[in-house]
Length: 526
Ligand code: NAP
Image 1 (cartoon, protein in one colour):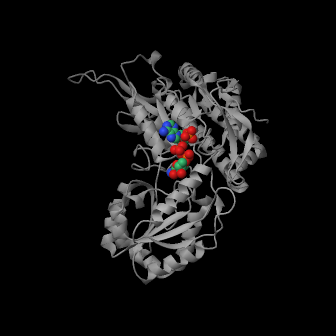
Image 2 (cartoon, rainbow, N blue to C red):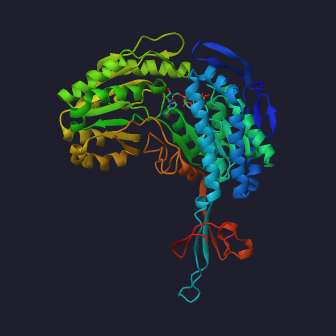
């Protein structure tokens, strides 16, 4: 498929006239054709108006129609084959195997949401029978969840497929019954065009209204802001920087009708190494930690940016093993020139804080946007006194924190900001200490994991990829996994509505065969 640089607005291909952008290869620093036209205000207006027009028809589609549509999107993305992965490699510097894996995750995610739509639990159908003899009488009340309305999605730079045009935010919003307008990330415009065309084709082949999906290019501060401010948009999905996410939160809150922004922003993902586990295996843990830290050039939201332990010979052995494993690591190409320079200044900032020691650096930076891995060490007192040390340095850099004793580890955990993940390495001999730590970690993170590393996020029903601010803007949700659909639903209660007018999910004859809560008890369909 030939790239044209046009945007997808409903069933039209539209050349944006507000300016142009070329794609950039971060490995070679070369620009690539074609020119991508940027959206103007009229393009944003048209995409949002079409989404609004499509909303009622789309949200009323049967679960089967919507599920088959999501599967058609997945099939069309699969059918792009090497065209998609080759363009994504050139635009991101990510290796082929990683992108093929990410494409697999993307299509599996769409298929998971197809299953979620079909099984219908998302509707949370709940019926309370009328009690006419009661004083006062109780009316017939029935509840289900419906789609919130058109959703704006901001593609992420670090997951050009799985968290971009047809990634987790888009899949969960479409599953909920919400039309989607994507603002493509400028780091991978060609990849975005290919995927957007795959979605556009699925919309047409499924006979859905054209406004179910649009994808526009443009600058965040103009096009992105205009999209979030548009009255037809009712929720926002975002993955990126704290600065970008909080700017969108402010815009959404200042609208005449404020709307929710589900922003996944920054997390440093603390890893706690408890004493007995270090006594038994400090060297192996040091090497395993560095593998997780440097995977994907550290460009994961779950990258382990902090390792915390009690100071002493075992922690020193861990630090020495990690340093030895990090030194030979080659410099890896980062996603964009901006992310590369933000990483360099973040590393520079860390090394200039009084009390921070550089333990090891990887191989020198190479050509293009290549980043040198870095490992630092600091004591807990210095860490707790310097807020700058809690700021995310996006890339292969991490800080080891030596605490005086277990009490200081607990104090440090309590002083952390909100996180996507918190990790504990322990043996049975550490369980007493781990039990004291766990309640604090539950308060700090969306996912608590033991004896592993936080990189690698499973897409399934029990996953939470969320957490308190600044990890995300809304601690009650997840952006990965089946529960992500909840972000784009709202409950409606139906009081004394005649059977003939009730939605299928709530009718007495239960035509969708849903499991429902009836008078407070779960009833599965027979
Ligand atoms: P970003 O700068 O936050 O950009 C993400 C998206 O938001 C882009 O489409 C961007 O458009 C838009 N945007 C940014 N600021 C905006 C604003 N004020 N108003 C409206 N839209 C805005 O993130 P990035 O480009 O992906 O990476 C930059 C930094 O973000 C990284 O160095 C890293 O620190 C962090 N990051 C974190 C994660 C994570 O998962 N924790 C993931 C990716 C990035 P424009 O490109 O046109 O500005």
